[in-house]
Image (cartoon, rainbow, N blue to C red; front, side, top):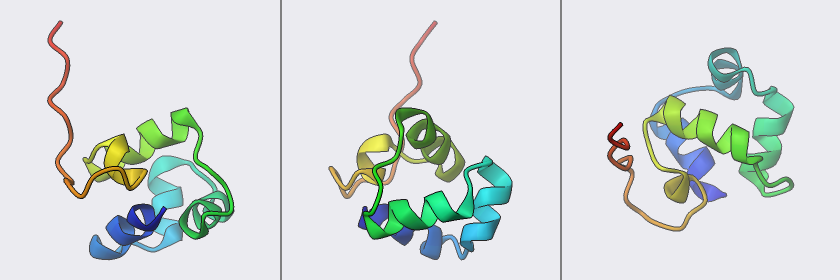
Length: 73
């Protein structure tokens, strides 16, 4: 999960800042970043929205940071 940490560092956020903005506990964020724990689907959506990126980027499946276009209603 190198991109979860990378995007946080690029944005100059601490784990505490991410916790305060997303509601995901800092200890969980730390475990995501070290690969000790895989993010839940719900937390992936929260993090992707917070960082304005795609879930694929957070999961290291792409190097493209841009989010996908939103679904048309």
